[in-house]
Length: 104
Image (cartoon, rainbow, N blue to C red; front, side, top):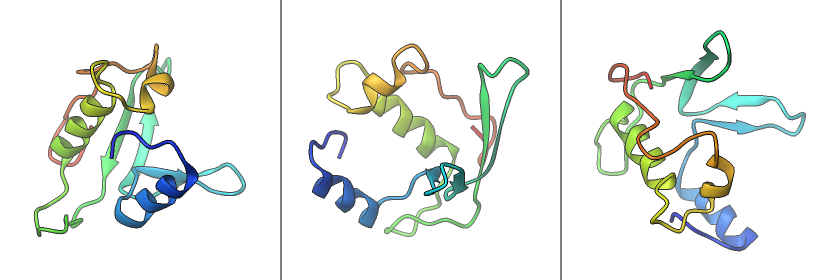
């Protein structure tokens, strides 16, 4: 789902979806679908290397196109994504770009 309003829904999402990275209790980031990430010199652009061999429930490969489509959906102002407030001023629809099949 793009929008959820309660902690139960948030926990449900964690049962059926994975993230590029997650915050650990010590506030460090743990890679999940991303293997690594790095910023450019001024921190305005981040590059994420994606794990290879990840499959969706239907057997299709997880690739950069999926990340681009997901971020475009989450950053679309016509949607009701909870992420809009997080992305405001940082990421807009069309702001995520594919570098190659496993890099955004």
